Image (cartoon, rainbow, N blue to C red; front, side, top):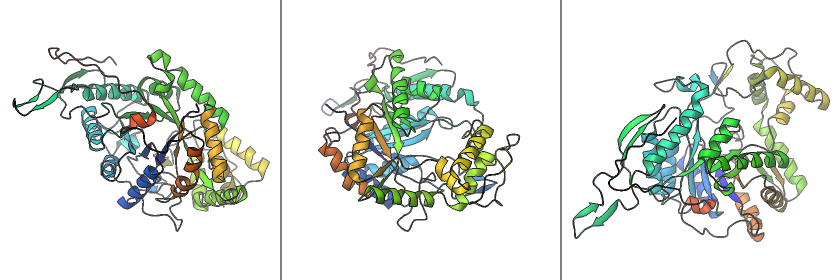
Length: 459
């Protein structure tokens, strides 16, 4: 039997994939935009809808710019509202562990799981930069080296809270006048390096017990965290060979955590462009890339590597002759760590520009990525299926370039071809997101009624 393809829909709007200036683009904040994309994904029988999160607007040379479509309503509020207008679609949100507390977030996610009938998912992310932290009471207090330690303990603590209500805690015995089977459901105590909390969790056990855990880290620490704690990991590897290497690596880490290969799904984020012919699709892709990288955007992206004010440079002219400035503070704030070795990257870009005769804008288009799947609907369906059957991925998070209608053509023209091949569902078979993804029920431990619920989780 061929592998079944996982499909998710990313609501664009926090990166320069989005072409906000296109006449077909709509609002990034109006609720009708979220509804349109979510209902389109559900019509296409997608596994889940995905929201990213930005905790601070990015700046360059002290100004907020339009490289990113700025502004975003609160993730959990949007997902809770979408639960009321969808019936099967999973609802996944990026939620930060650095500036939140386990009790608060576990309560919110359990509530979303209840409201949606078991469709909640949490993309676990970290932040270590003080720039983002300025929006929060403790600022940049967390050393970068500790961010995954905190995240891992955060997830362990949240799981302890979600399990604190036994499955049979609510009896609802009207005749006997007894609602609960025990005196203190939800009792918990956690003592660790990052969190020291005790009390009673207020939300009864939710349909999935644990919302699906997603993770988006490509570093060795990120991969290991996903192998130990996540149900799915995002990747950004665009070629078949790179995807297969990543897939083998993360799957090979699972055994030492007592897990099976199917316990972790690999889901890269991808873009797509469709056309009636391959030539038409390629022409559309070229047009979209030039919309995404305007002359102004090209200079701003170049500044992020060079760490210099390059506003006087011609976007169609040559790259700067001097090397990037690695001595001072970053000119771009909120996008730290994009280029670990700026000087080496700049030399590579110069060589590429000379080899292909590229000016600044064309070079930026070349090096900042391109559409993952371009072609006719049949070609795109075949290539996606080949990726999955070749173990380069278990599925894809589709990132359309338009809000909110950018997914419409894919659902209408590509999904039926995947269904014809027998690699994508024609109807939802289950009710929860764990059902959609083919994940086992969350492993839980039923504590005896007489056991004092005090658990110490090691760091």
